[in-house]
Image (cartoon, rainbow, N blue to C red; front, side, top):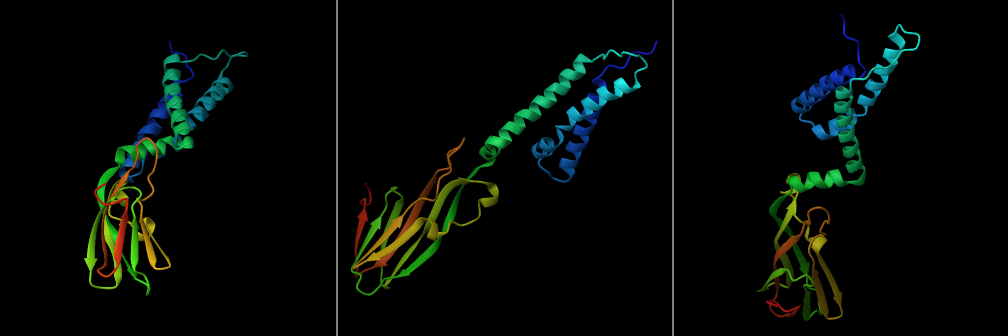
Length: 219
């Protein structure tokens, strides 16, 4: 005697076939399998709905009784639940945070050199270091201000080789006979993983100009 068709078995079978095809495509095309699954998973509800409609349409009974395959529906439900969780994580940005947390690498990136001419009449330079970065002060023979160094930070692999632009961390302002130079760390991203930065900078100033560092070096 032929076993009766139970709703859920076809949807589960098609879901497994689709998952297998998508995984294969993601591997061959080097696509992100999580993003592929995010696009695909709502189709399981479409398949299940079509299967119920197909059962009702093809049934020979006047008042058909839908028979469900509970085990198949349970597995389909798990796939749907996983897709819903991914959707919630993606909509709140948490999925991207998790993705970045497991791919971050710690690197030492160069800070692009910065050169500024010392305006005529400037006899004093105030070097402001509010975040206590590591600064090495040197005296030079030219009438120029030079800054260069490195920034150790956690970043994404694709950003690991990109230098830190000095203009993003150094500001220079001249007031009267004083030039104020402020050195700050790059913006730090808050999230699951705190992406902190640490600067090691060398500052070269003219010999004839007085220099004050706030706070003093070594404190």
